[in-house]
Image: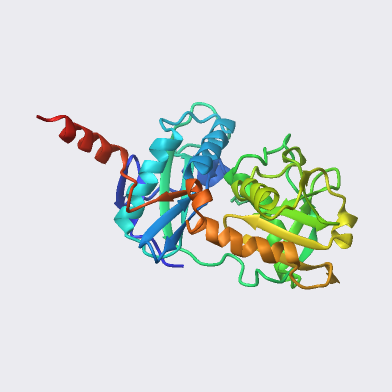
Amino acid sequence: MTMPAHAFFRGRVVPYDEARVGVLTHALNYGTACFAGIRAYWNARESELFVFRPAEHFERFLESARLLDMTLPHTPETLTDALLELLRAELYREDCYARPLAFYADESIGVRLHNLTPEVSIVAMPYGRYIENDESLHATVSSWRRVDDTMIPPRGKIAGAYVNSAFAKTDAQRAGFDEAIVLNQDGHVSEASAANFFLVRRGMAITPPVSDNVLEGITRRSVIELLSKELGVPVLERSIDRTEITLADEVFLCGTGVQIAAVTRVDHRPIGSGRMGPVVSALRPLFFEVVRGTRADYRRWCHPVYGNATPREDRARAARAASKP
Ligand code: PMP
């Protein structure tokens, strides 16, 4: 992984090496942090970098912070501005991945959420594929169960909860699989270790509802719209039984990291034909057109970094300059 040169830290963009915390930091010891993962896609024809749906990512980020009882002096707009400022400092001209983090920064002992001070950082680095083999994944149904809303709320991207994902992912990979599919406490399909789950059966796409302990994925939301509006595939949000995976015509995962990944085998059983099916085959190229900003009708999801976007201070400066006689 290419390391970033800068970080947004304590309210400004600094050299990455200056963004450091001590080993006693509360979040490092107790997992009391939340994060986001946001991709930006390079569009070579326009010489522009497009951040994918930053407002939605930062809304969820602030919701995760609220779950952790954090009060942050930020809005989705100020966080977007911070991200744009950071990306402009990095001057990336390739696909990249940004990692906003809100963490309890106190260097103190004592597990709790109250009487603590949150801080926000953002870093971004060049990033390609999260999963190499995203056209024919072999997944396993994990023996680990997804954290429940009554344990650590899965609808927030809460750092500590990712140990649950890490157990599932490592066991799956050590057993020779690419990815884990995790069931919730009821035995229904929840999601993969860091991606939402869809199956296609008899022409209909089905994905677990947000009340089945899934992260409310931004890609999931985008995919639901693309499937139903652009590809004419109806989407149903309902609980999914484990055996429905075996009988599915297609299975795929979606998320900022995995993007759209076709699952063609689960626990050594082929899904449908055992090859990437027609719905995922149509969805993938459409998704990449959309995120790269080449589909006019979805351009509203793509926030330009270098061109039209001016951060808050620049806008204020421009407004002041414009108002001068
Ligand atoms: N579920 C989990 C557990 C995740 O970590 C992610 C990645 N953020 C997703 C689903 C997909 O969410 P999104 O599309 O917002 O990245």
